[in-house]
Image (cartoon, rainbow, N blue to C red):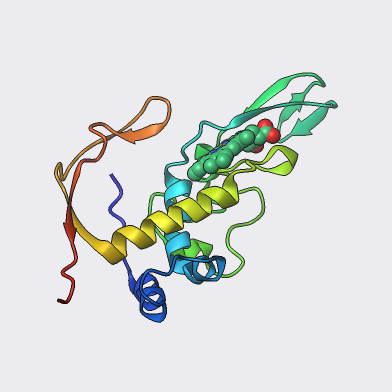
Length: 173
Ligand code: HEM
């Protein structure tokens, strides 16, 4: 299981600047750069899909392989995203890989790429950041099974569904 370094500065600053009860907007999501880098590093190390298929439209050569027209190809984000050439020390959890220009094109592909790239990727980004914002601004939490294992069958998931105990932040009276 990856232990994610938490830094709730971004969420705290956004929450402080908002009138009570006002919902998040796109500008707020754009400010959560570090949080998105953390999410991307999780998507790099544990891509939630096993890739997708493509059909070769023409004969081509890739490395030492000749792929004939009509063959079906399967790409795996898991392997590409652990390539030492593009992600030094690939087993290290390091959100700073996504700072600046980030990884080279087509090396970070949790949402696929090209014309059939996942159309839900921006929606998924919004969902992940809204979830992160709400959980860190409202709660602390404790994992109920500290050393819970992750199984891959075929998608990665915590064996027991990651049970946690939520502890609401104290609100001032
Ligand atoms: C973290 C969340 C998500 C991940 C990692 C993900 C990943 C992927 C991947 C790898 C593909 C295959 C892309 C390819 O063929 O190269 C895909 C396709 C697709 N995804 Fe997602 N997805 C996510 C969330 C969503 C959401 C929230 C929606 C819809 C609201 C969505 C809708 C679709 C659709 C419709 C396709 C098929 C696109 C096509 O074949 O043209 N996905 N997704």
